[in-house]
Image (cartoon, rainbow, N blue to C red; front, side, top):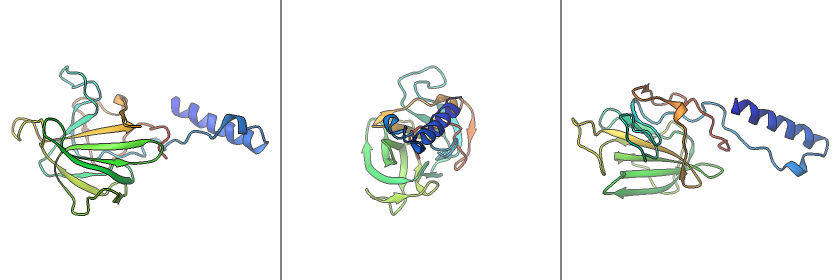
Length: 184
């Protein structure tokens, strides 16, 4: 419904602009086509934003439990803005910046692809690293191997829980069923 409303506003803005009345409205908001962002890894959703499936809260992204060292790919095209290590939390992680204040964060990685550098551009679907259990998570066999994946807007985690449910299997490269407004 929200997607239709935004598309309707865009069409109205374009129509008004074509007759000289759109200047007061400003530019129409850009919107990624529904499902333009892709799941970065294959596995099972074990946590969502503010909802760690078994009942925890204060969680900023989706956790996808999967196979150790399976490929993690860029969910959307952009440039690497940060590569780091956080001993108590994210472990090995990378942030890719997109347009209009959007970025994606990938954490607990076992390692990165060889061309991983700040400023390097990755297309949606390009491999960026490998699923692991670095940082503040348990070792394999205890359920620790997973990807922590966040969608951020102006460095603030976004809530998009309608894109997947606890226990749902997701496949790397499949569309995330959600519109991220302003990501074009």
